[in-house]
Image (cartoon, rainbow, N blue to C red; front, side, top):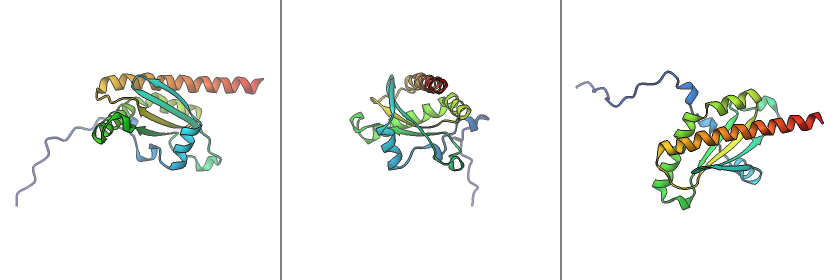
Length: 158
């Protein structure tokens, strides 16, 4: 028997992998979570991406999830066939995975639990363009959440 040759396609792992993870627990799942997200949520768009988000309050603090953000990646049927929709969702996932550090730190500091849906408005395979739209949208989301926190604090003082 001959030894198996090493795979030449192995990519070296970067040292900053932990800050750019998208674990399975951070994916939004469940019918009730989606119903709540689409019933009582705020929306805004950034280029080719529609952001739909709602804050989630957990009744029991001991049952809080370790992560403060759960995300869904959606490509509607009007985008195209299954191949195009899957490619669009892969691009959305990857751009979100590499761009969400600021949002995660904001949510941890303010102890906010958030459900977020990223919906593709049209098929776009250009990674750089989607990445720019994602960064602008996530910055806009952080600003909107900060504005909501300030509004809530001002209403408590009155």
